[in-house]
Image (cartoon, rainbow, N blue to C red):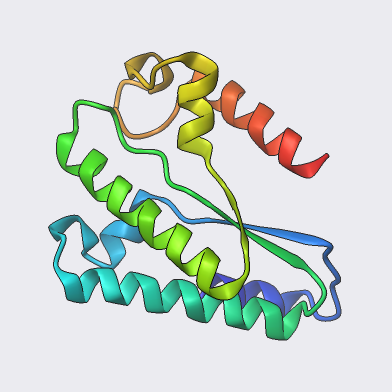
Length: 143
C-alpha cells in the first residue's frame, strides 16, 4: 500500500537502486510470529508481489532486499521469527534475482554481538548507538 501511494504521488521517478527494508511490523502484519505456514506464505507472496511491482514500475533499478533485525534479544519469540523471515527474504531474493543486504550479520560482524546496548528502553526501537550502526550500513549501501 505504501508503495502504491508513493508511486502515485511521484510519477515518472527513476531510481538506480531500491532498498526494500521490511521490519518486525511487517512480520506482525502477516501474523508470522506464529510460525504458521500460511502466514509465512503470505509474507513470501507479499514480498514477491512488491518486487514484481517495483520491477514493473522502475524497470532498470537494481532491487535489494534487506534482512530484518530482531527486537530486543531477550524477546526470544521475535528472534526465532526474524531468522525464519530472513530465510524467506533470501529465498525471494534468489527467486526474483535481487541482491540482499544482511543487516543482522553486519551488526554481528561489526559489533561482535547484538545486544540491548542498541535498543531504546522500549526494547523495540534502536537507540542512538543502534541507529549510528544502521546509518553507517545504509550510507555504505548508498555509496
